[in-house]
Image (cartoon, rainbow, N blue to C red):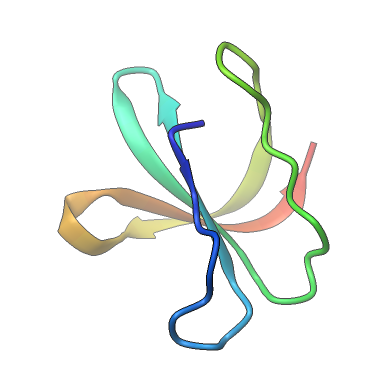
Length: 68
């Protein structure tokens, strides 16, 4: 994990977590109501399922539907 959003600037309730996936940065977007997000620490692994799209600044974004 590189970064976890600590505030919600647009008020939609989403939580964004930036992680390293291979040699890329990926933004994981957890929708409102997904519950508390506890990303793993350095060297940890996280498996998510969701829709992959192009995010801001060319960083891929996964709209997380399921964890695990």
